[in-house]
Image (tube, rainbow, N blue to C red; front, side, top):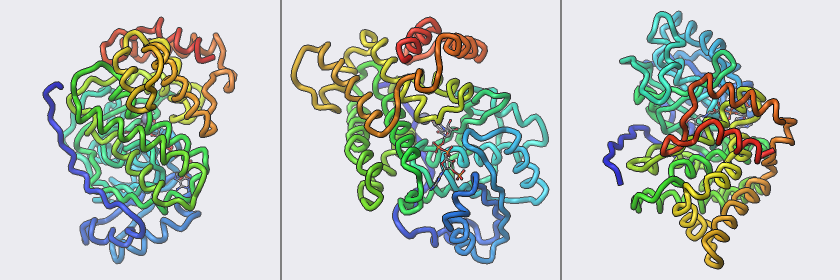
Length: 385
Ligand code: NZQ
Ligand code: ZN
């Protein structure tokens, strides 16, 4: 295990019927901007409940943050925050709204050049202040509610940013708020959370037993309770486990002190930028092909994954590894996720453009060891056709 610092100040308020506690979570004298997406929170009454629990505070609204949040849309929120001297941001939605709100929290403290927030990759944004923010999660998937990351679409490309300044002060995780999700969004969330764990776990053996076993527990929980949540809106216990798995998958705990391989995410972001395919679905297309291509590189960890996560005890090492990758792909398919590019009419020409765009973005040396070059990305995509 490598040296690490671990810090996570986000207070989690987990469980049913907890929205009324918002009153205790936000300063009494705060002027609050509630940010949300395309309208689901209005349609399903969540916004009304939130406003009533905010009591006498002055509350403004900003709706219309789109999936894969757009820079231009968020700038309008920044203008509103600056003009109205808002002092607390409340994100109500999925990853897009939470990420968008994090961006607004940073940008509102800058008079100009807001795009510079996006050009630091995974280095912390070089600024010193942000507005405080809280989250109410309506889609378990990204883990944004308990981490320092955001991903914003600018100039038709997805740009990640990170800084501890945007750790939410609190996040409310009420499984009832997710009951209105279409099944496909539940499936996307399961795939996204599963692959967040995989990208911190399925690297090289480092004898990080706690991180490995937490990761294996999360993967097993997603395999067990993901499909139940997908199939059955009445099973609230399964939904609670799914929800907490998604948050725990990307809150820094399992990634502390271990190598990480975000290749699937980096390729997936480009697929979303080019073709508009939902984030979780892009990952599920890429991961099986990536693991097959990188079998030798990840052999020891793949074997551990086969034995401990998929409980494969029979056969040669090669058979166990193949079995685990096949089971992973079948798991995504069982959630209605197609894992082939042809389903989206993506062929040779589109793959070449995608690889060229990754080059432009400087994404040329991916993986935990930096040796996943663009010719390998090309191979992975060709075998996902
Ligand atoms: O906009 P509304 O009308 O609310 O509809 C949304 C949206 O269309 C809908 N939805 C959300 N909650 C609902 C609901 N519909 C009915 N009932 C509810 N309770 O779901 C749709 C998708 O929402 P979105 O927020 O885009 O999905 P998700 O949570 O998957 O977030 C994806 C975004 O997060 C980024 C992705 O790149 C993408 O932009 N990521 C953020 C990460 C992070 N901050 O750590 C890490 C991830 O890997 C990811 O990259
Ligand atoms: Zn993700």
